[in-house]
Image (tube, rainbow, N blue to C red; front, top):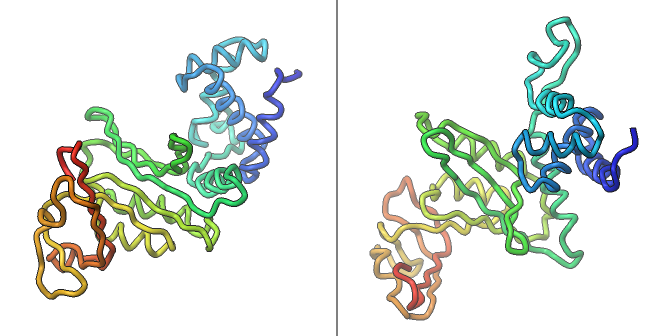
Length: 260
């Protein structure tokens, strides 16, 4: 059946940048993503209905096709009768997605901003996500979902996400990794620097820092006053040895803001 205008090109683009996927996986991923863009929604029903209209197929046929793509191999149709089915390991897509984004940047670009974020959906899920920040938007390239109330550290998840992106960015690029307050940790600082990237981690005002030219520690509260010029300096951040990185501390407190 002929594809509607644009879908063939879309399929070719997906196949070019994610060649490690099987042909069925690339085909249904193209349908999913094409439908999401046109429907302005990622809802299963919305996407299935729109794609069904484009392909002149029944809603139920398309809905099942999209749903089958997300199922684990053992639950796919025909698996119980001995048919060979494949799981889609999304982590294998993280590095290709980052390469794809890099190829979209201007040829003279040598810098990249990456943001990490933890978004909680009520008491159900927490989404740990790494995105490329570009043109006022954030393009997700790696992520995982954990139970919001589950016990256990996020460290293994973040390390796995960063590990999947190791070696992708050109060695002569400057990559900064941004995170809001609450995501700072010494292991995270070193995980980022081990990749050749630069941590840009926002921290709270609690704690102390030691300037590189002094043996004394000072409260972070005293780094800067409201309305003063921005400050930067090489420091050992925090007094507790287990938390300390040797780093550059940046501070800014514009008059319009309640906190630095």
